[in-house]
Image 1 (cartoon, one colour):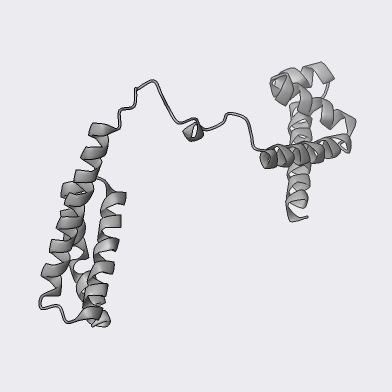
Image 2: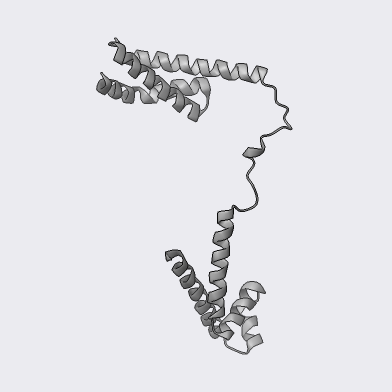
Length: 171
């Protein structure tokens, strides 16, 4: 019977889910109802044959969904919670976790090491562009180099940083 129960359940799954959704109006809850109905049908099949498995599944889904709805309504009626109260555990923290902090620290250390090994002019170009927000023409005028040289220094710096990060992630 379990093999035929599986086949019948899979054939009716879409309509069973629709039936549960109409009552509970929540996909996760409806999925839970379907799972519970399958388990109950499986248990009932172990105790003896079920005449109409499809009808049994539909009736079980309907009953479980209605039971869930009744319990939820009862809970809502008797569990009064003021709107200004909240569960502090459900609020996400703005601060990074200890693991995130450690990872960021390691990346920063790798960046500093890579930055220190760049040629001096490439370091200046990178700082003026990325930290100070200067344009390539302004950097070229300030350092008295061509815009192509500024571009090449930026390309060198960015490639250097990417290599350092990829090496760190492989380690």
